[in-house]
Length: 476
Ligand code: ATR
View 1 (tube, rainbow, N blue to C red):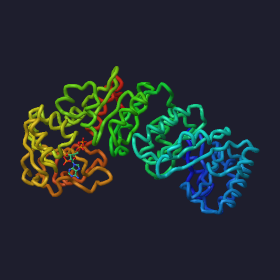
View 2: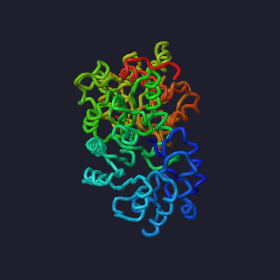
View 3: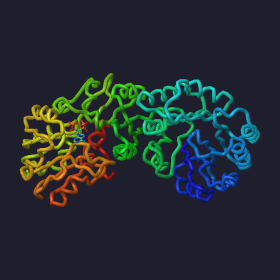
View 4: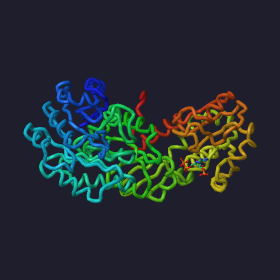
């Protein structure tokens, strides 16, 4: 079930939140602590104002809520609210036998026994969840993973407690896969929100219509994208609709990664079928691959990993995705020389692609030695970013491949003050924002622009073929 956490100050506004999200949700949680104080007293009316089952919650400040009332008063409010027809009530782990519990049991309201950890993950998480469920209640653990390893622990705990009625939530960005794959982890529900909230929270609309999270089952093939940062990615918007269009029971989701090795363990554990690779892992994944294509070998970077029998195989779709939008200009001779800013994984594919087509390339990079290494592999020249102005007016194409200018730091350019003549074709591979600072400056000078989203889409289509064996559906 997808459960919308209501966050409006009045019952009527909460009702409106449900109405707006009705087609995406199965239930809602009324957080009394987020209501205006006067509204709390009317809470018992709420279940009759909506057609979805409602969880009653009055969260204390120490558990991340806003309720600062003395405990006795807090419980009195919950008891009075239970006059309404709530289906569930959330009672914190440390609240022993009390009047809220007694009334809930009398009325047949299911109890969710919860504990929260905003700092990390309790060592005894397994036994705590198990204990909470002992009296037939639904155990709820909302904890804060800080690494892939922590995420893996949560999937494992969830798996081992397969038959225990539970809700396991990984708060923050690291927990996103668990929120999306809540059915895989045997959680009764996942929480969604209607407005811009904490990192990691997803809207009900994206859970339902982008990820189809409520339809994941044991046979769903899992794909994803690894990166750091990763949550700005648009790749889920390419692959998920593609999977649906070809009727493939599969899901594609973002994984924030700190350690590639741990991620491969998680990927095996989840029996993933493949994943995309973005900043900064395009080179560090190589050592975990059992098979690579000729392009990956020559480029030295991989942006696509697929499962083949007994091993992981690395492919590079960046180079062709990059070339496609400027292919004609290279073929026609309009592009003969290029300045490539950056010498990281993405740059490796781009420099190779250009050199492979006979374009003369100069690499400019912050760290000269990285530029030098890449230049030596591809027979091109190199320099530092500080010398960028030396190359003004000398090239047909300028390609920006670093992460400088990427959301949220969009007011930056790696070649601040570079003077374009207006004759250059300027291509920034960043796609969020579409119009980077560098591209704005190029546009002012009258240059022809190419955007990261063109490359993203082209490389994504090829990735889709590698993942599924099907062409990307037309018209999506
Ligand atoms: P990717 O695999 O996506 O290319 P990467 O391998 O981490 O990511 O490469 C990042 C590129 O952005 C590198 O060229 C890096 O320069 P260094 O070689 O000097 O590290 C460049 N880069 C990252 N942050 C930068 C910054 N603040 N200023 C200039 N260049 C930067």
